[in-house]
Amino acid sequence: MSALFHSDLTQRLSATPAWKLQDGAITRTLSFPDFVAAMTFVNRVAEAAESAGHHPDIDIRYNKVTLVLSTHDAGGITEKDFLLASEIDRLV
Ligand SMILES: C[C@H](O)[C@H](O)[C@H]1CNC2=NC(N)=NC(=O)C2=N1
Image (cartoon, rainbow, N blue to C red; front, side, top):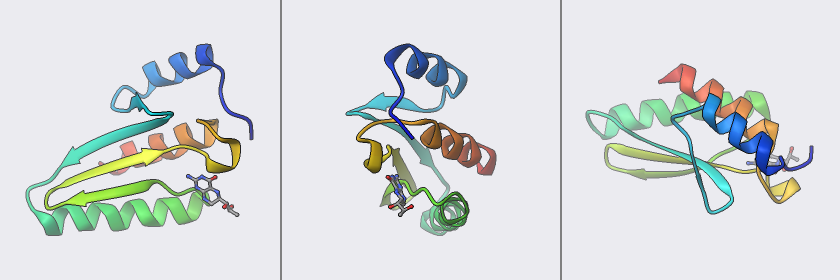
């Protein structure tokens, strides 16, 4: 799958407003009541990622989880990233 061109990227970002473009990836940070709630969410993300065969970089800091999505194979952001981002949005 090839990396999206700028115009497609802008359009997909506006349809997925919780995600921001940063350093060649799309990223979302979420806050939870505590560490256990954050980990429960991360485990649900892990299941969605395994099903999709596509995996976000995940940074966990107590009750804050930052997800970073890009397609390493394509060297950029692809439709796969937005599909998983939308799936993750449904888990929130
Ligand atoms: C072989 C396997 O499908 C690939 O390595 C997948 C796995 N998960 C992946 N996840 C992400 N974020 N980018 C990839 O390019 C990628 N490639």
